[in-house]
Amino acid sequence: MERFTISLDAELAKEFDALIAERGYSNRSEAVRDLLRAQLEQWRQTHDEAAHCVANLSYVYNHHERELAERLMAIQHNHHDLMVSTLHAHLDHENCIESAILRGPTVAVRRFAEALMAERGVRHGKLNLVAVDIGQRHAHGYKPRGHGHSNHHVHFKPAR
Image (cartoon, rainbow, N blue to C red):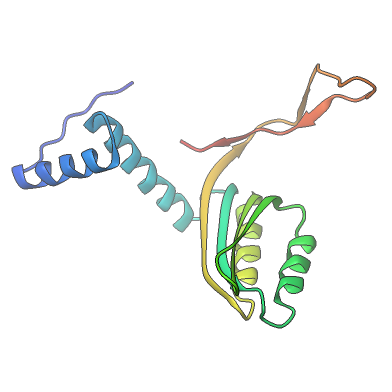
């Protein structure tokens, strides 16, 4: 671990300490690390440095909107290679919120999210991307009973 020292004026230090306390950090170092990670991630995203990502796409929509649920489902099925999981919840008699966990090439994930959020009736869409490095495809030695194959998979390691 590397150390570096920064100097803050008294007012900025006071505001930073208030932020740290509100967010529940135990020390300034961890808060600074999180701020740096967030800025580096934002930089990666704006400079197209991230070839692959994991992401959360959340959006609210009116399920009474004509054929909207079917259109959303069709978009998801057409991009099954990007979809990991979805969570659906009812907000009231008309509105639902969905959260989709995605992974894959960053360009493809962005296009998918933009297409889904552009559907008539989708409101309050938000995409949160995290750059990842993809490990080698491999298998662990575990073979479930009655199955003649190993668990082949790839690891998605968040970029530092």
